[in-house]
Length: 334
Image (cartoon, rainbow, N blue to C red; front, side, top):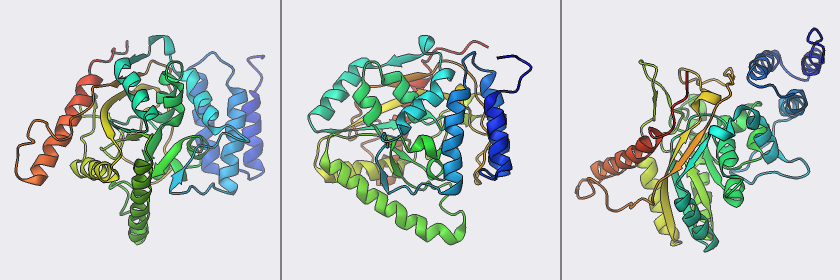
């Protein structure tokens, strides 16, 4: 294409805005993100962005209504593939790593036997489900596409996220950070969370499930020194899931998962309550590590008689496992 000519995508984006198929906020955000993304790769990204724009515009007119448990949509349009196509040009797969393949083979065997696996993980980008799939698709394709993600409301309410979220298996809950916003919706959100937990109980009772949970309730961010910190895990969240797993009576195994995805789609520097954050893209490697199964009953501090302290000790112990594995990832070159 002649460098002086205007890319086809931007022409179409402008037309969508003029015809009021998308609001001004979407027009500005997507225009910026497209330009930022284009700088990261030599690939022709217009075909993908045209499809992405079409799917976003559909959500602006008639937002998809997610069930408490959403099963990925692959027909007639493959939203799972859309998510992978969204992330793939940003990932330097040759320098990306997967650690813990012995555990991954063990996990696949558990699932085939009808057992459950719960990953207790950190969370860095909106696209973590797609990053996990990209890293696992060649050797563990069924695990990559079949994983269930316990996710917050943003992935099912933001028009930029919805088309990709439709390709995931999602169990959506409201995190503690946002449950009070707005105040008049608090009770409704609490009831939603109760329904979601009932669904999770049923899924665990069925067996054969792999479930990703980020006990921090949000994404990792940089500290005042500019270093990425793994957000602390919430003891009550871990306790609740553990009790549900025991109640289900289906064998359930817990594994620590460390993710290094921050640089390709970093979150805002501060937590935003409102929707509409700007997206910044950067090409780079991503990393995944699965540690040995966690003994949920025996850990440093498990001898404490006081239950709240015992739960905190367990959460801190699991956080340290994830934090340790995270710091083993290769460092990005400046």
